[in-house]
Length: 361
Ligand SMILES: Cc1ncc(COP(=O)(O)O)c(C=O)c1O
Figure 1 (cartoon, rainbow, N blue to C red):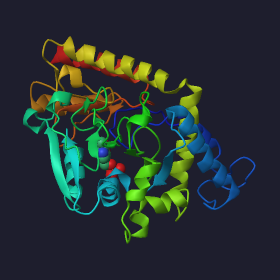
Figure 2: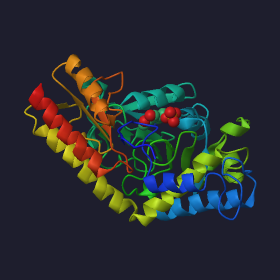
Figure 3: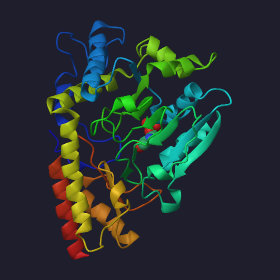
C-alpha cells in the first residue's frame, strides 16, 4: 500500500483507517451481495440495511430521540443555508443569526432573501477570534429560530455550550464538529452538517430536525427543497449519495466501537491540547488566532512572524509528510484540522516539526 501521510485538511478530510480498509476490502463485492456498493440500487435490500443501519447507529451514538428525523441530503451545508429559512421562516417572519465567521455570514445572506434577519451578535469587529457571550446576544422573542455555527472552521473558534434561546428553536450548522463530542440534541430544533469533515466523503449532508418544525414548511415549496419530502420518503425520494452513506455507516459503527462521543471528546481534547500547548510555549513565535476561551478543538489556527515564514512552514511541513496546513485564504496563516479520525501521532509529528522550525528560523 502507498504510505499515508498526515492530512490536516479542513475538509474533505481524514477518515478512520478502519472504515477505509473495510470499504477497500469490500469494494468489488459487498459480502453476501456480490455487487459493489458503487453499483447497487438505492432501492435494493442491501442498501436499505445500510441506510437504516447508519441511522440507527447515529441515533445510538448521539442520543437522537424519536421525535427527530434524520435526513441524508445533498447540496452541502450551503444548500441548508437556503433550506433552513425556506422551510422554517414563515412569510414575513424573522430569524436571529449569530455571526461568528464567514459561514454564518453566508447562511445569513440566504436567510435575508426569505425574510427579516436580526443579527443577534457578531464578533466580526474582533476578526472572528472569539465566540460572543450569552450577555451579548440580542435575541428576538418572536424569532422563528436562532441560527449559529457550532464550530468556525476558518477562524478556529467553537462554542463551548449552546446559546440560551428560551422557547425559540436553535438551528445549528455543525459541519465541522459534528460527533466530535457529546451533543444534547434536545437543545436543538435542527442540526445540519456537510458530512465531509467528521463523517463521510463529500456528497452527503446530514440534517437532524425536530418533528414539529416540519409543519412550518410553506405550501408550494419546491419538492426537493421541502424537508417533508425527505422525511416522508426516508431520504429516498430521489437517488441519495449511496457511497457516502455507506462510508458514513462504517464511520458511525467505528465511532461506537471506539467508545462513542465521550471518548471522541477526550481524544480531541488531548490532541488539540498538545498543539495549543506548543503554540503557547513558543514565546510568541506562533500566535494563535482564537482567543483562549473560544479555541476550537477541530481547527487550530495560528500565525507566524511573517507571511514568508508561513509559506516556508507550509512547504517544509508538506515535504515531511504533514499536508494541508495552509490557512484559509481569507485569514491566512496556518490551520491544522484535527477531526476525530486524525491520529494523535500526527499531532506529535507536527509539534516536533514546529519546535525544529522555530529553532531554525
Ligand atoms: C461550518 C461550515 N459550514 C458550511 C460549510 C459549507 O459546506 P459545504 O461545502 O458542504 O456546502 C463549511 C465548509 O467547509 C463549513 O465549515
